[in-house]
Length: 317
Length: 307
Image (cartoon, rainbow over all chains, first blue to last red; front, side, top):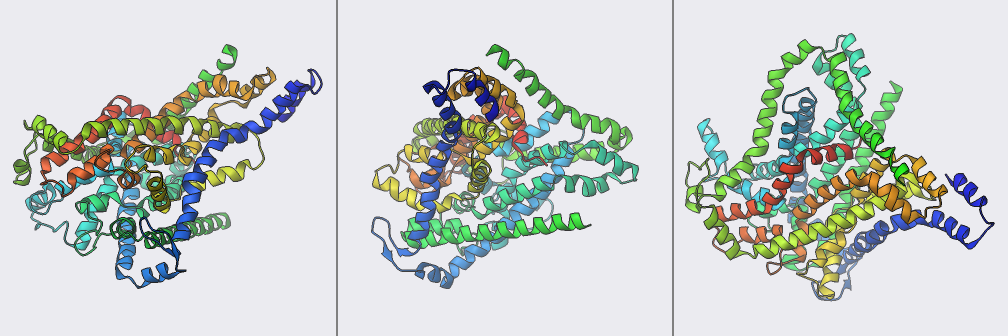
């Protein structure tokens, strides 16, 4: 590309200011095009990220100046049982909302990949929850999961199951909250899988069919390995999303940042909001935020490691 | 320029045609009609179930929004729409400033979508078709920034908007969202495929400066992807909760912040009214979905990482 430009300018007046300008334009314009992104990121992403790290080493309250305390905010967290509860809850909530969601999305994508009547309808229908907001979906699910009059318990009653305490008990509350997440995102992930499945070469299926592989066998041995990068991508995105769960548990608890009467569904985000905006300890809240970043980096490293070893095993075998 | 844009349309079409054709070919060759008929009822059964589970909460939102609080909290829960929708809407508007909230959400989501699409197209074009030092490293950085959670930035941002007196003003929600790494990546993926590099070279040889190339070559080709990205970002921004919840208040809310206000203890909680608020917040997007659902579906599948 660069050669063609030079050829064009060589044909004209030698080294006139137009040519110089033109060459400068060619050189500089790529940076001009990516500049808005990097400027905004520096101002609203990178700078706050580092500043949060600095704040986490200070005692600072809303409206006061910072006072250096070193790692005390972190050791305070270590000694705080509610921090550990929040960490555990974030982990369990993440697990029970991400794993079933992605498994169901895979199955759904497989079904949507069949030749179907009303295929467009099904695709739009499963994506419809994506159009709802965290706030709206949570408020509606709070009604559905109400232990006294909610439709879920009524339905369970019809099939002979006793009413479940969807808010005061730990696991039922976490299941209810994770169902909001799962409901909103399953269809979205299914469509991402579907796109990847449609790019799998037909020859692979032909070969498998010739070898006598059943449809299930083909799904396991051809489809899943072929779309592995996409699966990896959705796992990362969903993990990041699950680590940040905030609105669902907040609204499920009636706008309370405590995450239930016994903190049974208080996530790290809620805990951070509680520390920062309810208690007013911004330094402590910053420490929570940085712990979240460390956890994400750790998860990312583990996932990368798993992917690498998987690929190596594939190459070796 | 007319000459330049000519090869564009066909290439765009052939691309979508190719993705549409591929699965069909696979079905004809490897599928075996018999196997597919066997799988049919089961597949339809599961899909109908999935569609029901997806759509039922939305349907029930409409039902609950048209009943009284007493109807909802007395089992059996009503399953058909009632006649109290207008009353509930009036109460929603009494309790929170829903008009302001709807206007604010429209402004915020509109500004964010416009600027994200504009900057993402420019950056996506640079990353897809221009050669410059550090391109790959910078693209890696863009993708990596997607993993930074907002929790890591809200505390300094909150301090900043407090200092400049922007708490409760919508510019504090708009400014931090003007660009999105996802958008840059999305446009790069699209333009890498859809924009023939010869077009850019030809325009350069003709002496077009880079803004001319953007305006007359890149934008016309990128238009379908820009539309899809715009819709996706609009939906995301309209539904955004965490930062608006912190930066705004009930005097000047977005729809989501107003909704959180409806569900909180400030008023006696009328469950029908709360659900009506949820309906008001969701309805605009559902209407967009009803009209443009297929394009949005296509956009999401186009933006996916393909193996």
